[in-house]
Amino acid sequence: MDVSIKLSVSFIVSDTWLEDAMAEYDELTVAGLIREIIDKSIACDEIVANVDEGPNSLEEFDQLSS
Image (cartoon, rainbow, N blue to C red; front, side, top):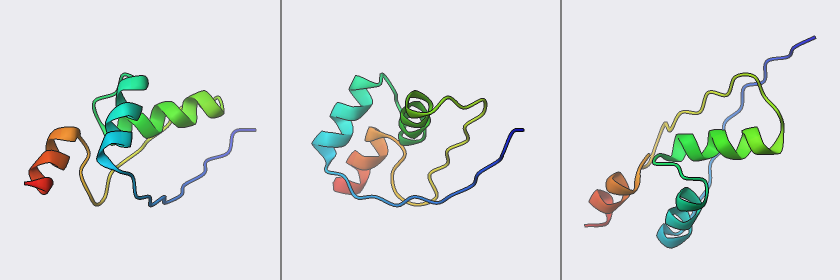
């Protein structure tokens, strides 16, 4: 039997760690990074990740920093 699970996650990460993690997983967005981490941790058929607040890319992060 398949089960659907929906959750919210909030976290704080430094810019260098975010950039390193995105490079390691070869992802361009935070949502993509989270999808990859979950998929590698537990096998899932469908993963939907959305960024509700905060930057979703390094470009958006840079715009907030300046």
